Image 1 (cartoon, rainbow, N blue to C red):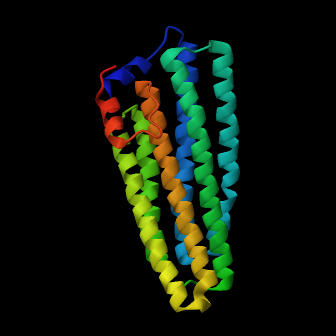
Image 2 (cartoon, helix red, strand yellow):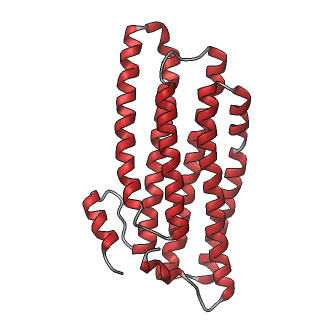
Image 3 (cartoon, rainbow, N blue to C red):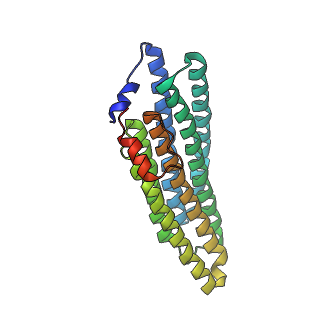
Length: 241
């Protein structure tokens, strides 16, 4: 754990401690749900299992309920406790992470919806290997970002940001290959486009995982690293609080 994260250890008010702990726990529960959504949506798509895909789509209700709950908890903490400094950063960061997690859930739901359509239209001649590979990659990014938050550890956050660049390159490479295939076989255009939409959704999941990592850095270090070059992010992480 980063030494600066020890500042989050506790408060005079035990009730305040409990409220912040509950807030963090609920975020991790929501994160676990959306991470599994991504994994299962990819599996449903690759296997063209429409029943499983519908189940994945249905889980979005649970994610939405947690989003509403956590948003309300953030409002209550700010209204009742009027947190300052590190505590305010924690609450604000959680509120932003919730938004990113909800968007990840939306992308997983989109993939599941496409899986249902593909099960009816017929499988694509290409793209499943790329979907599985990038799907595993971004799911790990989400898991690692949540682990950064759970541990209040900013050290791995930079690696997650670097991984997003790798995912972007993998997405572009896969897209180019699929476009070439469509040009060679116009009959496959409709089905290949579905694969490309899935790849785009997965690329967006990677973006949101990076956002979560950036929010953890802000929460622990107090510096906003959005749109900041990676070498400067490294300097922020290494800086003593």
